[in-house]
Amino acid sequence: MPHFFINSKDVKDNKITIYDKENYIHLAKSLRIKIGEKLLLIDENQIQYETVVEEITNKEITVDIKNSYRSSRRLDFRLYLAQSPLRSDAQSIIIEKATELGADGVYPVFTDNCALNKSVIEKKISRWQRIMYEASKQCERAYTPTCYELTNLNNVIKLKEEGYKIIAFCERFTDLSLHKYCAENPIKTDDNIVIIIGPEGGFSEREFKLFEENKIPMLTLGDLILKAETAVIIALGNVIYEFENYRKN
Image (tube, rainbow, N blue to C red; front, side, top):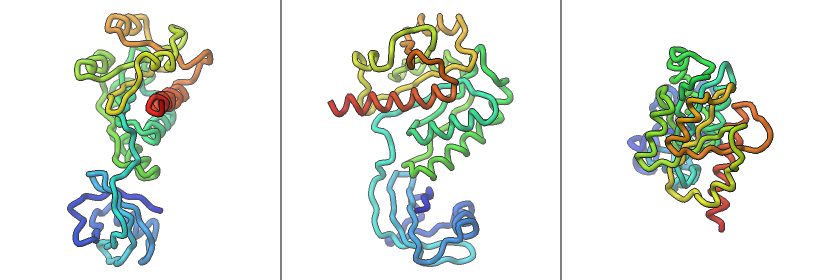
């Protein structure tokens, strides 16, 4: 069932009118939606609407609301990825998968061994945000995450001052696993978790020292050496697993 984001102001008298040009073109021109077909719509308050198309004009689509409820397509804690951007399509895959896995936002981080120049990264932010939007529609997320402006490790670490829990995955440098760490530091509902993933060339000695000085836990994902894009998916997935495991127990 097609899933689209709307604004709550378009909801009135148990009907929703889709005026937004992009949504209209996608529905009417690309999908060629017909009267009687079902649509899933969600507003900025994360209210999900199960609807049926009632009328289609040359400018708008009106749907009848059959059911509405607060969306459950979100994590019960806030998960963020701070990551050194990769070249080519690898970064697009990371952005897409982070969105699918429920990340609330991605911080592109310029590291000492970053594969891209700052100017290149800055030009790609809007494209990555677009990927997040499309991925959110495809996996029926309750909201679209944010791709933040380019930053550095110092700024990410400063999030500790706002109560964020920050962990860095550093292969070849530690034998402390995420599971062991979470046994003593369980992830709880409403926590803000930031996971840091470095570039393909790894973190520099200066950056390792920065983690040590700021008491940022450095964890491993196991004995295998993973490509950066694989490490992101595994790290996000494992953090979610540890949260669910703690909640069940």
